[in-house]
Image (cartoon, rainbow, N blue to C red; front, side, top):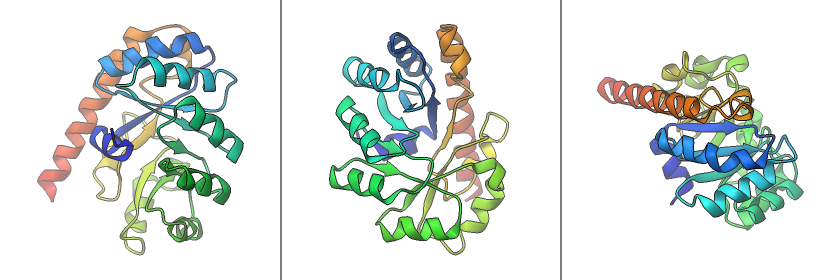
Length: 217
């Protein structure tokens, strides 16, 4: 599967913080059952690498990537664990170059026009906007569409069920990253049925927002 096309088709990237790698497989199953066969496993916990590897090996139908990648070393760890895409909270040229060298889609975080320009200089045109809501949310992205017409974004940070539609209404938004359908506390409590239900609701909301955008075009 092509990671970007899959992300674009879903409209949502579940951002996952996981403390116990044994929860990885039931989590992936719950996301997929809810119609969101995608997980960005954030490298914020010691269990992240193993969790990513388990999903990559056991659920090849689920698009799995690594998030919160801060260094080239972490990017290499994620790649060897089976990550199909890399997401970073900021723009680090070393991480970007590593991913480009190894053919891994990378979505570095940006929050200023200067950082967007640096990403363009590196040959990238799909970027993570982080932290989206504190920066100004959909209004910020709408303003950015004028000088950066060829750039698309995956806004993350404060995106939730209540503001999702506002982001997906914009032509320069590929998808939104968020954890509201699978928060850390639900994973730890093994509330996988709840995650499946919320994933389904999130996907339905994304599809409705995209349909509305199509009608408005």
